[in-house]
Length: 216
Length: 224
Image 1 (spheres, rainbow over the protein chains, first blue to last red):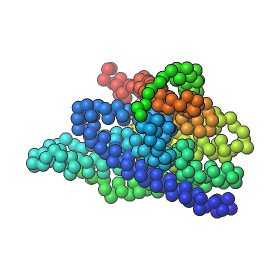
Image 2: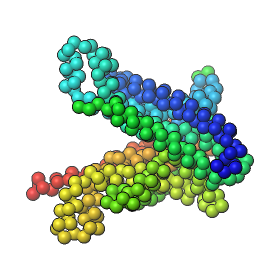
Image 3: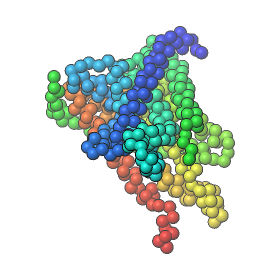
Image 4: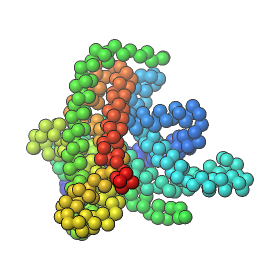
C-alpha cells in the first residue's frame, strides 16, 4: 500500500467503521419500515394505505441529498430539537430506502399466488397467521435479490452523509486528502474499498437467495 | 415551538430556483444521452458471443456500479484536478459513466430477452448482421426495457443533485444557497422536492408514451 494510505490508515479505518455502522443501522431500520409499509399497502387498509402511497411516491421522487438536508436542517427547525448529523443521516437513510424497500416488498407480497392464501385460509388459519406464516416469508425470500440490490445502493449512498458533515469513509478520506493532497491515490483507495464491500454484499445476497429461494 | 411557514423568501428568490432547475435539466439531459450511448455500446458487448468482449463489459459494469456516485464525482473533480475540467463537465462525466453501467445492464438483459430466432430469421431474409441488429433486434429490445429505462432515467435526475457537492449550480445547490441566506429550510426543500418530483414524473410517463416503446410486438399480425 502507498505511504499516504498507510500513514492515515487508522483514521480511514475509523471512518470505514462509521460507514459500516450507519449502513447496518439503516439497513435494519429501512427493512423494518419497508416491511411495515409494504404490508399495510398490500392489505389496502383505507386511508392508511393511501397516505403511505403518498409517502412512497414523494420519497422516490426526491433526491437523497434533499432528504438528508431536510432531516439535518429542517427537523430541528420544526421541532426545536437539534439532532446530531449522525442520527439525521441514519434517519434520512431509513426514510429514503424504506420507501424503495416498501415498493419491492409489496411487489413480492403480490407475487404470492392467491390460491396459496385461499388454501391456508381454508385450513382454518386466521388472516393474521396466514400473513405472518405464509405470505410474508415467501414474499421476502422471493425478493432477496431486489432487497440486496437496494442494500448495495444504500451502502453507496452512505457516502453522501459526508456532505452534512458526518466523517464517514468518504468524508474522512477527503479530509486526509486536504492534508496530504494525493487525490488519485486516496480516491483510488476509497473506490477500491467501496467496490470490494459492495461486491461482498451482492455475494451474500446471491448466496442467501440460492439457499432460501422458494422453489415451486 | 410551532414552525411558522413563510413562503415569501422563496418567491423572492424564484430566479435562482429557475436557474437551478434549468441547470438540473441540462445536466440530466446531457448525462442521459451520453449514458444511453455508453450503455448501448457496453450492453451490446455484454451480450456478444465473444468472451473477451463479454468480460470487458462485465468488468466495466461491476466496477462502475459498485463505486458511489459521490466518489465518481470526486474522482473527476478532485482526483483529476490537474486537468482543470469545469465542474459541469466533471458532473456529466461522472453521471455518464455511473449511469451508463446501469443502462448497459438493462440493454444486455433486453437483448437477451429477444428470441434468438428473430436474429436468425433476419439474417435468413438477407439482412446483414448490422442491419438485423439495427432493424430487428434493437427495436424489440427497446420495447422490453423501456420501463427499466424510465426508472433509470428518474434515478439519474435525482442523482444529478450530487453535482451540487462539486459546485455545479443546479437545483440543490441553489436551494442550499437560498437556505443559507433566508433560513427558510422547510419551504426551500419542499419546493425543490416538488420540482424534482414533477420532473421525474413528466420524464417517466413521457418515456412510456414513446411510440416505439408502446407498440406491442406482433401487433401488426393480428391486424393484417
